[in-house]
Length: 102
Image (cartoon, one colour):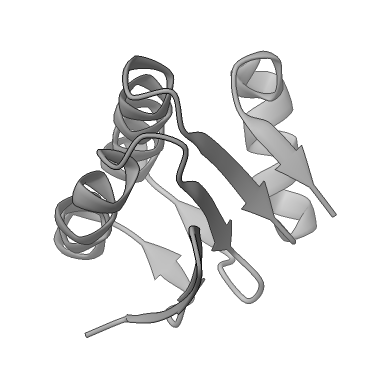
């Protein structure tokens, strides 16, 4: 498992423990986080510190999770993206649909 999930009340903090968020890992992320976002009012924080690379499946998973959060009236925040990942989000204009915090 590449995820470390901590819960405190209605807040879930997910620390991603890999340097490359690719197909295998992005599926695990989506499968583990989607049910948490299904809880109305949940606050989910995904910490990407240390993730140096995200491929298209990783991006797709984050977009899918953002949609799930909106549908279930939950909050999804992406925290601590590395510079290259932050630049990718800006290039793809994901900074407009994802709540990204340093």
